[in-house]
Amino acid sequence: LEHQLTQSQKMEAIGTLTGGIAHDFNNILTAIIGYSTMMQVQLEEDHPLQGKVSEILRASERAANLTRSLLAYSRKQVTNPAPVGLNAILLNLEVMLRRLIPEHIDFRMELSGEELSVLADSGQIEQVVMNLAVNARDAMASGGILSVATDRIILNQEFVTAHGYGLPGSYALITVADTGIGMDQKTRDRIFEPFFTTKEPGKGTGLGLAMVYGIVKQHSGFINCYSELGHGTVFRIYLPLIDLPARSESMKIEEPVHGGE
Ligand code: ADP
Image 1 (tube, protein in one colour):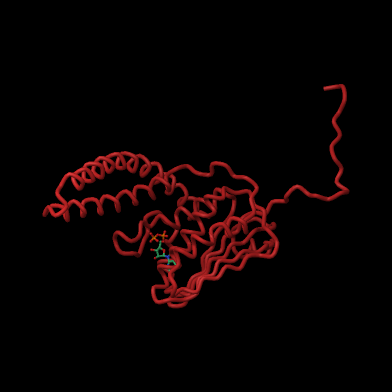
Image 2 (image 1 turned 45 degrees about the vertical axis):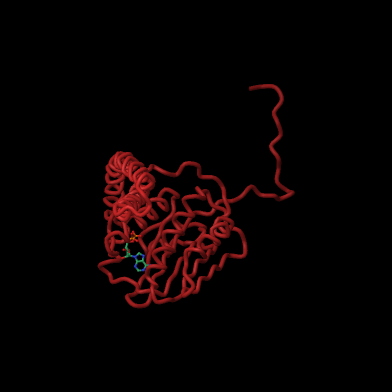
């Protein structure tokens, strides 16, 4: 618990800091990209500087991508949580996921039979699953299986006591599992830290899982990770289920009160 507390405080501080820097940096990049695009247009097509201008543009685009992730991370999110169906969100996302996952990875989506209603910001839930899927893809350079599944699950007191987190109740469970390279204990201990990455410079920002962690927390959910070096990784996300308005005929409808008040 102590670990989680310092972690969210740390994330908040870094979020505020990076938000400010990323914003200013974005303006600077806009100037660099704008002027180099103008140069590219004004120079003769076979001018010897064309290659160099292209390099400037490519590097600036990379920097712009990074600032965009930083801004997304630092933004105090959870705009409009609304009652939504989790399976519907994932079905919507499926096309994009399939585009993201290369051929040599066997992508499976196994959604629960019944829809799972949660109070959530669908954009952010999409972001969570995307970030986990990107990591799973990166962990399976030489192929494997990626599965995204949903379930309805009850956490009882026994589970809560055994794991030391959560509240007993009914949850929607999202499982994202891969058969990739996995992680050792030392890595796993740090994955939710902002800027922690084992990827080469330019490939990873170390913000993906920090973002996932923050979003899950803001949805009153929790996340855990099981991983075995050389075998694969499983992320489980629990989001509290909500009861949709019951359609039962026997439900009493509140009568308007006449007079009084
Ligand atoms: P990034 O992907 O930019 O490195 P993340 O916060 O998303 O940042 O992930 C942090 C680190 O956690 C990764 O660099 C990697 O070492 C590890 N990691 C995350 N997901 C997986 C996975 N599915 N398999 C193996 N390692 C993973």
